[in-house]
Amino acid sequence: MQSLQKVQVRLGKRSYAITIGGGILSLLGEQLTPLGFSPKIGIVSNPTVFRLYGKTVMQSLRNAGFEPFSVLIPDGEKYKTLKYAEKILTKLLQERLDRKSCLVALGGGVVGDIGGFAASLYMRGISFVQVPTTLLAQVDSSVGGKTGVNHPLGKNMIGSFYQPRLVWIDTETLKTLPRRELLCGIAEVIKYGIIWDERFFAFLEQMREKLLSLNPDVLSSVIKTSCSIKAQVVSKDEREGGFRAILNYGHTVGHAIETETRYQQFLHGEAVAIGMHMEAKLANRLKLCDKSSVIRIRKLIASYGLPADMPEGLDAERLCLHMKIDKKAESGRVVCVLPERIGAVRIEKNIDVKTISAVLS
Ligand code: NAD
Ligand code: GLY
Image 1 (spheres, rainbow, N blue to C red):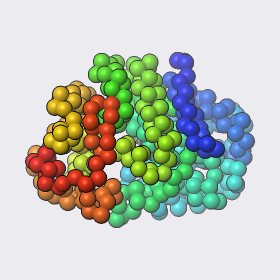
Image 2 (tube, protein in one colour; image 1 turned 60 degrees about the vertical axis):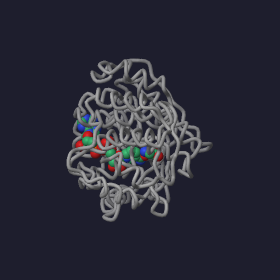
Image 3 (cartoon, rainbow, N blue to C red; image 1 turned 180 degrees about the vertical axis):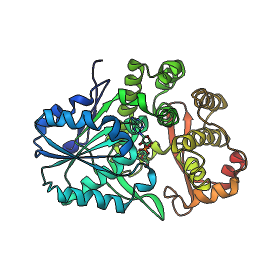
């Protein structure tokens, strides 16, 4: 086993550790022993992930003296709903979890979001632990405490800020992840380089082959740096009063693309990849960022096999309309995170829709 990497999320009494390592799933149980949880532990997962990793996690918890049971929701974003959150809660009641119980979320961002949300509601809040198994969940959704479900009127519109007690990342779980899902996580990784750390961006330029072939040391290092950047942002602005919004770089255009294509054509990370390139071009048009940075951003995104350019046939005016009603918009004005250079961004709150439209056309 490789050495473990640790990142601390500093939030006063709600602080917690993220641990990263290869093959550490079977060590989960002993991590939970000192936390004083009741013996019964619920594991929220889906059939795809549970088939692969459920046995190891259940056995690890049993070895540490816990009595685990599973609560499975079907695999897919469309099941991240209040209805399935209620199903999870019903199972927790049937199993008679108490206030000192813990819920483990084993899976990607869907399972983590709904699992954390259920934990925040059960008896007004019980402990939960994130065991993320997609790269996107390992570098983004399992860290920072945003939990929630979708509503027919909007994605992620119902939720709470609720921090996990710990995040336990086994990089070996990524070996079974479909390539397209892996690349979606890489899009968020590239985002951290652009918003925060030019050296990390350069590392991603150099380590493409090793990262894509899941070299254990490179993978651990990339996940550690990503989590550390997210942890620093969240520690400064846990509830997105303002600063945390820098994590939305690429997402204003990305969400508009997802909405316009009805979530059918692109996975989230793919839409964000195009969004990051378009928002860099927008920054250049507004004279905030030089052309060479835009070219470098496009090149890195494309080198990982992610889409970077606007897909044929999408109407720029319609995309702008979506941006104006997005939850990040303020009174109909488009809010966008724009790079000033690689490693630094600013939040622009009053962008002229015509300028965006020109960039997207
Ligand atoms: P996901 O949870 O749907 O997982 C993607 C697919 O991979 C699923 O089919 C899943 O079953 C499968 N899978 C997971 N781990 C696997 C493994 N190790 N091997 C094989 N298959 C595996 O998608 P995601 O990209 O992880 O997460 C997307 C969700 O995260 C969205 O709902 C989004 O809103 C949310 N999100 C939340 C935050 C946050 O801060 N809370 C941030 C970003 C995204
Ligand atoms: N994924 C954006 C955030 O956690 O704020």
